Image 1: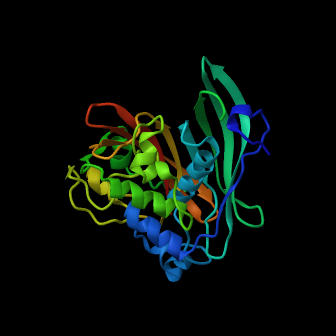
Image 2: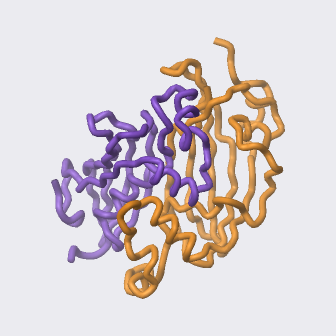
Length: 142
Length: 168
């Protein structure tokens, strides 16, 4: 586990970001992203699509990966790029944890650019979303 | 396997799907987005506390980078009213669709530029990047990639992104 991103090295793990998403999370997200899709709100629609229940939005997993980075780099860091594939659904009853590791560190003048492997996983370790990101850090650690 | 990709769909690859312009982004739009994606914990002050945000390198409130300024309704759009079904892309392009019912989000990729701030007006141009077909756990599936380019009111790039939808 790493502390400050300013001191991060390849292989370091980021502090995780964890949520237990359910309809109260998904409905709030639907309301801000206009994502009122039956599979995210109705268990029958989720089962008809091949899943155990209604399930959360991939876009919310995308936000959780951003949250993971933001809580680590703080307001002085910047997410440059983030991509992910959604490999499994976040169905009801799961605890979702966003995690990441540092895969590359480069310096460009006063800016430090970190490349990271990111994913979200449910409580048994099955990965839901898997991706990569680059973040930029300017200045010195506090 | 019979292809889901009609001749019309193949011919539409590379075409612009839509152009949209947002309403001016409000502080409350940013605040509510941040509340939703951090729920149930409070979101970072950068997204809702103007005094705090003024003291950061941003100089004021900015939106989380994955924020969507087009939720609910754009101010301007060339999208004709279509139902929010699994063939809306082909309907917008005026071509025959694949005849599939279910749709999932297969993935997203974003490269970010200028931050979105209160008052910004964002223009989005969406393009059909391509189709591929695979067989997975849920049977034969159609992957559709769309590319969006968002710019702000002074023409600065906000984000260039790709979204992959999976239909089956």
